Amino acid sequence: MPFFLIIGDRIYILKQEPGSDVIMGQIVKVKADGSELTEVTKQYTYSGLTVDGKIIYFGGYDKDYNYQIGSMNLDGTGEKILLPNPTFWSYVMSKGNVFYVDTDNSLLYRLKFDGNGKPAISTKIVEPRVGGYLVR
Image 1 (cartoon, one colour):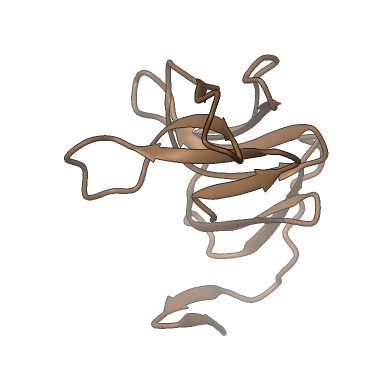
Image 2 (image 1 turned 45 degrees about the vertical axis):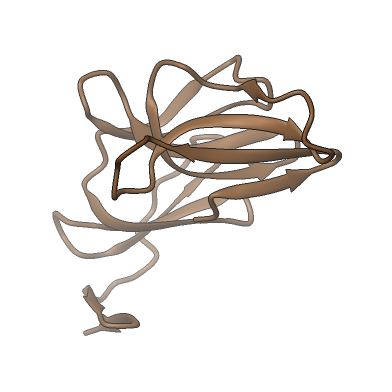
């Protein structure tokens, strides 16, 4: 997951919490010339983001520290939770989808950015390994 993205003349940044060893925090944006620093989010803690068109897709924690995958407009409005309390140990957002390995059955799943579908796309168990994954 990238921690900053360049969209037009704006840079969207995942601003790390001071003193934290874990990269997570609020999403901010700034013009490419360094002016107009603006908070996009204020209430939750985010740990990853990507942009598709005019929508930010994120992974982050709600006020009760439950993890969730969701989306919002580039200005932070219109937040929607696509996958609340997921049970996974790894995910990637790419090409309009969230791909993740479910910890309940160790299968690889795909969730479309619009929140539809959640089919398993593997029939074999996927396990984490240093530098990648093992499919058994």
